[in-house]
Amino acid sequence: MQEASPLLVVEDLRTYFFTRRGIIKAVDGISFTLNAGETLALVGESGSGKSVTCLSLVRLVPEPAGRIVGGRVLFEGEDLLRKSPAEMRRVRGKQIAMVLQDPMTSLNPALTIGTQVTEVVRLHQGLRGSSLRTRVLEALRRLRIPGAEARLQHYPHQLSGGMRQRVSSAIAMSCMPRLLIADEPTTSLDVTIQAQYLELLKEVQAQTGVAIILVTHDFGIVAANADRVAVMYAGRIVELGSTLHVFNSPSHPYTQALLQCLPSVELKRPHLVEIGGQPPDLASLPPGCPFAARCAKRQPICDEEYPPAVAIEAGHVAHCWVAAAVEA
Amino acid sequence: MESYDMEKTLWATLRRASRRQPPFVPSLILSALVFAAIFSPYLAPHDPTEGDITRKSIPPVWMERGTWEHPLGTDRFGRDVLSRIIYGTRISLAVSLIAIGVAGTVGTTVGLVSGYRGGVTDAVLMRLTDIGLSLPTILIAVVLVAVSEPSFRNVILVIALLLWPRFARQVRGETLAIKEQDFVALAVVAGRSSLWIISRHIFPNVVPTLLVICTLQVGYVILLEGSLSFLGVGVPPPNPAWGLMIADGRGFLATAWWISLFPGLAMLLTVLAVNLMGDWLRDRLDPKLRQI
Image (cartoon, rainbow over all chains, first blue to last red; front, side, top):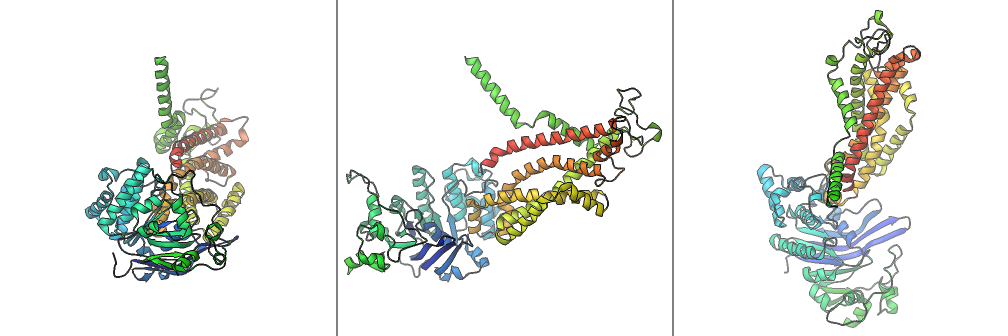
């Protein structure tokens, strides 16, 4: 699936929050690429910087406390961080769309479904009348929303959570964006609806060729839906590679620990495995590897210097001194 | 046993149904008032501003010297009290509705912009609102109208000036809460301008609260206008404003008490009815508010 040039190239993105407590380095130098039609999963625990990364990509970081302080976000070759607000408004919605976690608040309770979808389509496609309505119904049917015609008159509170999430996604996909950022879209849904939704998303991707960044804390979802995965910790990507590679040969101790934590039917373990300790305070990060304090394989150098990217195999890197020693 | 359960359900259903309807007596009173305001010329037996001096200070019909021609008596200029009360509904309703309209528009705009934009805009607008809220109402009204002269326009402007901060403060609070909802963030992601988001996404969600505030303010404004007219800085004579009527009769409370009492009662009933309706409306809209 090698495209001529990747759809999205993120280079050394840094987003800091300036508070009275100090500077919180929510995203501290992450880099990754994404090709058209690909799904990249961003995994990590709460506070690892996954959501702030998403907000940074569309420049929605809450100001004045938050600010993107460095790096480049090349979308189709153009640096989004250099664009004017007016230019960004044109990119958003049309080229990049988002789906958020909570279906209850993702839709405006005071407007009908029809109005909300129509607005977005009208803004970006400039259609009127019957062609507008056709496109709106198309958008709803793409997400397999039953009885789309009737739904146009309904208000969000008349829909179930799963259906609302589908409507949100229909709105996001209505203008055929090249990139869809889905920030934990299934976390609020129950498991069967989750599976349904993710299948639907894959279908839509196959139909439209949209690239997806899927933020999740669930490795099961990663395994079933992502082509590549980036594991985040304390604002950095600690391991990045294809799902197959990362699952088969996890090279960063954090990834290894996370995979070990998954309860397994085959391996009979008497206790659930946990990772001891807490994530570091993002306002006072240690000079070395942020995971060092909790790492079973910690070495003296881990406390002193941040580990460089170590190539494990093609397209698979990990930031770890121990992995560096192994590969050497 | 069975019939007891059925009764319970029937009673519960009836109770629920009645809560959906507005309260009976207040609605009746308000309908009567609006009806009187619209059809004053057909309802009032006499002209409200022309008085027959030979018929001054006639008591209400049930008293000695009373007559059915003037059921509620006449004032010291010979003007029929009942007719003046009927025409007075126009003044009270018109002044309050227009003043609330103006104050509501200004206050809502300020609240929306202030809440959505935040930062310096918010700080400046809120300081203005604070100043507005700290002004001693009657004092300022008296001073302002004394500087200009009493007229319909001035009374409405003065009341609106004193009223808009209340709207601004409430609407700003609502805006702050609504602004944090995901659908607003998604509207930004979809590429919407601030103006669009404020008017198409935030404002419709503010409307229920706005309706309630408006209804609750009507009573207050009617009283305010009444007080201003009473003090002589509201609606100018010879308009049949209830406040003016009360003032007229002030010197004769012992002898010709009907001149002040009936307009006072009219005001009381109106404000009471409006407040009860406002309460009902707030209770009715509340569950829907909580859905946001």
